[in-house]
Image 1 (cartoon, rainbow, N blue to C red):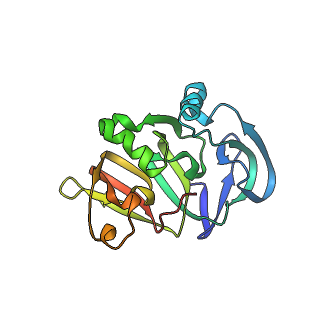
Image 2 (image 1 turned 135 degrees about the vertical axis):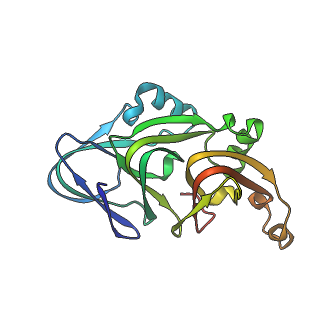
Image 3 (image 1 turned 90 degrees about the horizontal axis):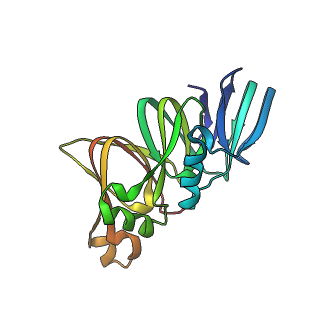
Length: 216
């Protein structure tokens, strides 16, 4: 794993010859060694199709290709950072949540409407997130950003997890999602808006939830 958490808002990446790291532009705080930073116009490992998919979705988050030999400190906007390790599975994450990730991971996009049909599309409108979600698959690590820290909540076939769409950061595993209405105590006390909807995730895996309803 190339990422080491320095504190809750900063990670250090080890850059090795022949191995790329992709990061959000402007996320580099400092570096040591012979390291180069190149604007990436191909959308990471996903190529042109991935780039077009994100542009259609309004998720064309600019990336940098980081190469060479040395160490790089990453952070952005004072957001909390969570490092997620992947062991051959797929991480589904909103594009603007990505801070940096292994270049060995295969990047793509998924139309959220394909999970939950029309309700999947409604989820994108209600949560303010794109209808397309970035996917990262393989063996490696991903550093994601969130407000107020992140907690990993397991999802099991016997116990689905319900998440406020505004607090959703990412998920992995064999998981299906759908949006459902839920009029509960939060609406009764006047919070309203997004709390009337819940994102239900079922199957086997985990969801990452931030301790805030703020967008990045």
